[in-house]
Image (tube, rainbow, N blue to C red; front, side, top):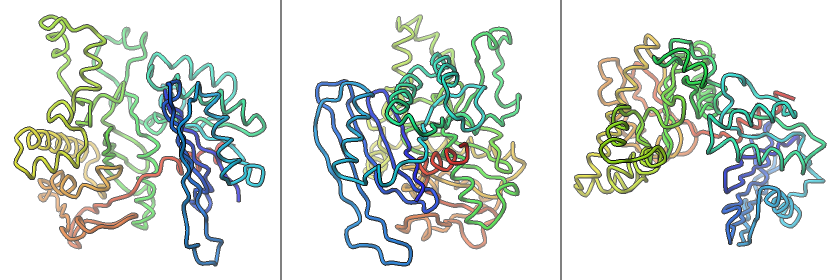
Length: 407
């Protein structure tokens, strides 16, 4: 069993998974939260995997949790190793062949998974100005992991890499060119690991080469984005210079007239930090309806609440607008795919987002769409001119695969 340790290091958290890509199995995973705070939370889950040819054991998961202070990411890695030693699986019996790291921003430089060297670390650090909320934590995780696992290769898998196939027409903003060059302002796109994984999984499900398909992939979670995938390549995506642009999200506004910010600065006296907080943390579903969870929005809408209904309508309006634009960019579409928490679970969102595409032959089967099911599934009607799928995303598995492919 060749396993990869996948690390997703946040500003105050460390998420890890031990993954066997060949079997698509996860022997163990865990989450260390509230790093640097007075009290942290540690959770570690061990999965008993069935041997090939044998029935699965009766007890599949065992989860261990505790509260303890974790000072920094170096200590978080020490805590992670303690969890493996105490609860298993023992890493000396199943040592990782590599460590894969999620890195949010690779700029225009990193177009593929990259083995981490001192020079790569420096480049990730240089990109902090483009992702000040994410890259510092990603870098802290890399440095702690390279210290803890010094004898195996480490690979950076960038959220932005999948979108480096965008054409200049798609990634260029219409601002002063010299200013854009100086400050590296362009569309980068995010959620790339998920969009790549899902579009390729959809092609396998349909029994078609990914290179032969025109797909629109909706990654709808608290963060949300949509990508037009033509022949396995990202050709258009909704998130831009930052993950703020595009669709309505849990707390982010998505698209907005930039002049709104000038107006608020002049009339409300809001400074850059206040405007940043407004658009990233006090907008989206939360800003419109006071709730960021789509389940709560749907419940409020069902109860006739005006704010929840408006928030839902704005959300769907934006999805339809992007679907239409991307179908035009692709010159048609073969498959529309939904993924992530909302995309995988909110049948109303899927049906309403596509309700106006009947003129293109898009037809969602109501029973398939509302059926409780797990795994990849088709929700389009038999006579639909476009395949409509729900494909669960698995960014950790995708990172593990790309890590093995890079070493």
